[in-house]
Length: 410
Image 1: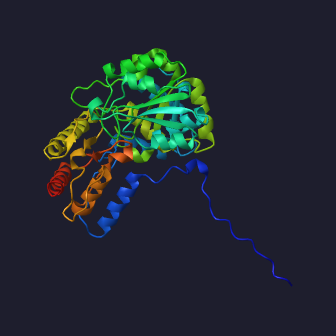
Image 2: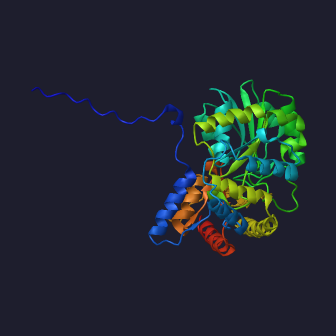
Image 3: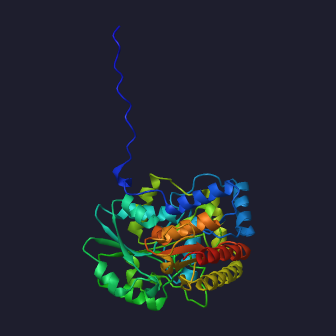
């Protein structure tokens, strides 16, 4: 019997939609830090985008009670009626915005909200304006959905905030969305009423442009900063705006994976179509916990915010004492975004020239075992991000090491 030729096995070829998307620099730095820890190195990681506090006890108890009641089945596709009601009350109580239950969606984290919204609304070539520095998942999600991220650099001189003239110049007939994040990851910069008003006036002049706002760090603001969400300032934009929030940061519930948003009924319905073919409903137990988070006591937020403020002040003060580093005081979140422009061109003790913020952050990890994230990971150089969601003792030690390593550069 003649041998039968077996065709070669086809090699895997990834879809073209992810061709330009790589593994997050943040994850890569984290992996390197973990590898060094396994080698016994005293690594301090200042890259975590989550609070170091525990989820409050009343929220955990609400989840346990839901399990005991047998609430472990599927819920409504994009959020239980009870959680949607709690979200609507939260928007009304804290933000002064009225959303009906069918104008609210709940998903497995705010990242899924973003994905659902862009997948439901973007056609190939549609543009989304994003001020940088920015959370890099924004642009990756837009590209996966066939859109074009339009990145507008906003450095420390502008408070890391988009200005009206730059927004006006960036808008084209292809612009579908403007995406704003306040307070910001990674800069901690926040938009007050006076900062938002000129931007909203621009949007009023361009009725084809929709507004997406990520308010995830709403409850982590300092120094009497007055948080406001754009739709509350300009109700005329409500019909073309999506207001995103969640329980991850304020309530230390990153692992529970609950995000939510309010927006026009037609958009919310289209987002539900996407979710129905992706994950279906969020976790029923996590939804029960989120109801308690939104409806339950909020007094602990002030204590946690005060703790973050002390850490912010510690980090900003220490960084600004280092020759070659300049750090703006952030209005919110739990990050600093400091310039390391003064380090560029200096030379390490072993003769390597620092050419970029990535070189500088690599140098810190390799010489003093401190992991921070270069600004290039967030679309703006030469800066680096520190997350101060860790203990003051660890921050003090890390900053001492950064100062020593910086002083060793010539």
